[in-house]
Structures are given as C-alpha cells and as structure tokens.
Image (tube, rainbow, N blue to C red):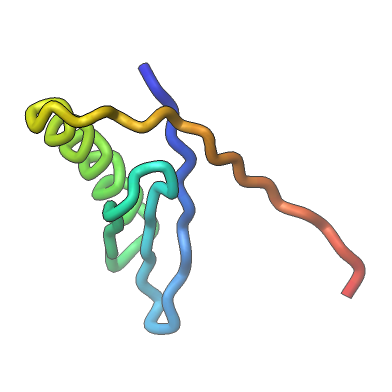
Length: 72
C-alpha cells in the first residue's frame, strides 16, 4: 500500500479541488470537501491501475505537506 499526499483547495464558489502532486495530471473538483475526498481516492486508484495497464512506472510518493504558523 502506498500513501500519496493530497492537496485540497477551497474554491471561491465554496467547492473543493484536490490533486496529488506525485501523480501529474490527476485532479478532481467536488461540490463539498467530502465529495472531493471521495473523488481523489477513486482517481488515485484509477490512475495507478491505468499506469500499470499501460506498462508505465507508478511514481513513488515523495511529496510532503505541512502547515507552518507565522505571526501575521
């Protein structure tokens, strides 16, 4: 099992986008955070299966994300 970092971004219209930096070309948009989370999970699985079927290498997860607190 691999764990990929997923970045979630809230849109101005209230929807959510999500992408996995280690899997270029994969991104989803949902009306809610929960929908985006579900879609990106499914998308990662489909993306990896597609790479395998095409005989392409599956990228290793290397991206890390962290929150940094700063005085504003």
